[in-house]
Each structure stands twice: as structure tokens, then as C-alpha cells.
Length: 121
Length: 110
Image (cartoon, rainbow over all chains, first blue to last red; front, top):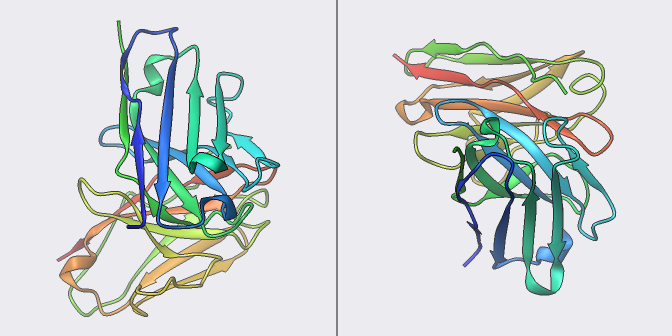
């Protein structure tokens, strides 16, 4: 089955860290760029970070640059997001999404169901 | 990386056409043909409806079409159906390996 399954979300205190994972199956994971997108309850989508097929191209939203790190392990068909120095405004549902292209096409044609991150003391 | 500008709401009666705009700058929408549109029903993950300004993934009805003029992209839904009622988001490549979404438009089928 073609799918993306996120995990690693939870309740975390401000300033602490969390690592999200996304397990891919049913397609050639190592042939496509991957992205993290988040959505605050009742609000819109925010692109967070993206990584090319071979990790050669990586980008971050200004809101997370310097605090979040995206990575991938093509041998494990997995995408990761290391989130450090978490803030209340990072509270959101985090989606893992597949791009149609190996690098940047900004065409996210497959999405997981998301994992919820809540930053609160 | 300022969010692209979309109208908060749009509406139309069944069978009618509705167009949703997405305004950016020459650094994103106007600078690249990497504009995409997503449909999101409540409680569901977004679904890709249009990519590269006007291309449709397989399985998306041809009632959905996209275009771009300058710094503004548009999504047109023709022959509105009840199931088209959803939130719609535009997205654009913004250079330097970054992307940006619009604020979203709630489409109501009257």
C-alpha cells in the first residue's frame, strides 16, 4: 500500500526537543523530494521544510530556521524532523508529504495523516 | 516568506463556476511556474488538485483548472458540485529551496 505514516508527536515543554519520523511505503522513496508541512488547529497550512531525493537540497521556513533539522534515510524509507528549542507557536499538526519530483517541484502529491505536536508547560 | 494572499471565502451554486485567486510576488508566484493547489475537507489531509500552474494529476476532474498572470495564480472550479465544498490552498516555490502556502479559501456550494 502506498502510504506515509508520521510518528513522534506529543506534549513537550517549551525549550525542549522532539523528533518526528515519517515512514514511507509503496513507492520509490529515494526518488522523490519530501516535505514537512504543519497546520495549526483551525488555521491554514504552513510549509516547514523540504529535502531533495539525495539530501543535496534542503530548505526551511524562516520561522523554524536554526531550530529544526530535516533529514532522510533512503535505506530505511524514512524522513525525519528534529525540532529543538520548541515554542508555543510550533504547536500544530505536522504532515509529511511527498513531492512529485526528485528535487523541488512544490507539488505535494501524497500526504500522511499527520502527527500532533503540542508545546506547553 | 510571507504567506500568499487568498480570499478567505468564495461561493457558488451547483453548476456554476468559481475562481479563487492567489497573489504573491515576483519572488514566488511571479518568478516560477511551480504553483500548486490543494483541496482539504474537514479532518482530512490535503489533496493535490493542480501543479505547475495548470496541470492536473490523474484522477482530478477536468472541472478543476489553474492559470497564472504575473504575480497572481488562479484556481477555477467549473460545474460546481456539492463535494467541491472544502478549503483550498495555493502553494508556490519561493526560491532557495523554500515554499510558501496561501492562507486558504473556504469554498461554499450554496
